Amino acid sequence: TWSYGGSLLAPIFTAGRIAGQVQVAEAQQQQALLNYQQAIQTAFAEVEDGLVDVRKSRELMAVQEQQVDALRRYAYLAQLRYDNGYTSYLEVVDAQRNLFNAELALAQNQGGVLLALIGLYKAIGGGWVTEAEALASSSTDEEPG
Image 1 (cartoon, rainbow, N blue to C red):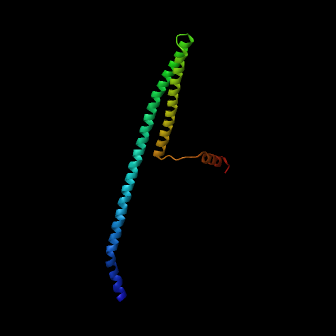
Image 2 (image 1 turned 90 degrees about the horizontal axis):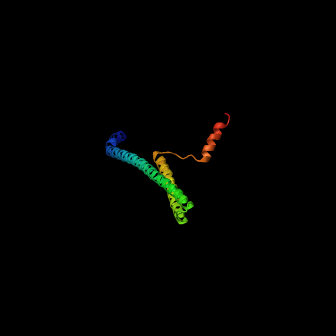
Image 3 (image 1 turned 180 degrees about the vertical axis):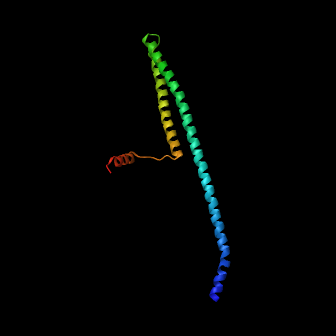
């Protein structure tokens, strides 16, 4: 009977330990929920930042395209003025230099737009498919089954 008495009292003594385990599990659950909420907030912030980056890059690119168009017209007119003897070749070279610098800035910003789009795609959760993976999947699709 001694073994029965000991086993009857065992749950009473372990009740504190079980209650502690429940509290630990509840704390872990609360921490997991907080981590999840933080991850969601971070994801939304990254997507919003990506959208802003894309929009601002495209706005800047539109302004730079207008600048390139204006400088292209100026370079054309400078060449016309030189061809007709109204100005020196220095004005033509200066106009071409300004046009080149504007075109270079536009090209760099076009790269920035692409990088912003890549950042947005990654923030949304887009994955990467390498060329080898794409070829492998297309070749398995083409093989007769």
